Image (tube, rainbow, N blue to C red):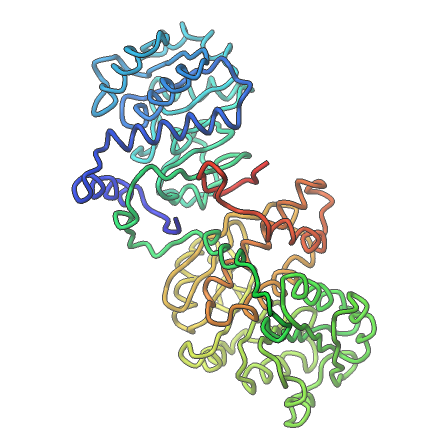
Length: 532
């Protein structure tokens, strides 16, 4: 489950599933409702009084199936349908018959505000609400009784599980938030995530995807968008029993300047923790001792310097050969400085070497106005070049404003990556990983605790380490690195508090991130939120 679909592509998937594979929509609806029921029974085991809110279409049908299964499991169920009974359509009509035939569930039809008002007890007395009013096919705005219900639910503290999407959220939306949508505490969607699931902040709780029987061959997309978390499987294979450090690469972190030894130190520590076989930090000799203290496993090389800044003398033939001998990944930028000779040194190091590159921070700033050198370095995609800019650095590289960058993150990332044949990690809300072939992966891990100095340096180290271990799986290695970094931040925030988390705390939680599996024992894939 890697593709991200539009609403139209999801509808086409359902049609192909029925037309080409003989699996009717009614069967998919039964599986979807069963998944919702299973999620509620597992994650809200103490909720005995449950109210299921249904629309007249397929989303409502999913809710009716869940209602029947929850009632059969012994729960006290009330169903509130926001329509008249004769307005139900498609498989939902048959599902309603099954519900009536097998349970004594109370069903209220509320096509208007007055009849909904009469069901206040069903809303206020519930211990859990299931929102299956409208789903993927909905287009804003909510109207009539649905809008009234949305506003009513906003005043309640009862947890709400949304079926497919919080009602009112446009499945194709790439916005972070929606004022139209119902409140949600968890979201259960089906087959594949839609745009809203990966771009939107749908809930404080989990967003999970359940497989409901659609064959993989039926799931097709032209958007070239994928979910970065799917690449985490790259990190889950056990290492060979006869492994040695030489099999996991040698990362060289080049950076630092007088007074900024923390950045290369953190990158180096992260690279060590993320599994690189060897890590060396090359820094100006005046800060070499401080950087070396970050970990006894770290090797340190002294760079010639001019007033605390890396000198272009390091680019001379013999010093450069000594610097990169035996290196498999070169990461440049953390703490390097934009003053003096540092930008020229960074550009020269990129142009005069051939090993795979990760460029961050001041190394990115060194290429402002010189992006042709990045194209040259990538050599038509023959050399791995990974850039990890935040929006400000991206704006400088692309000669745009930050506002322009944020207005078209996907389009800009794709254009820049394909034009220069680089892998671009555009950081921010839902970090994007754009590949030279035009594919883009969206990352859904991470949280506001990571808005601290040093987070980018940690990411640089993790990306370099993953590339060192998986040089032939560049796209998956970078995607997995970004996802692991955010996941470690999620574990840190859960263990501490998002206000107090430091960048190095994410390194301390990398072990939790590596051990985590996005798919749980009930076959839910967790797109957002951490399993308990």
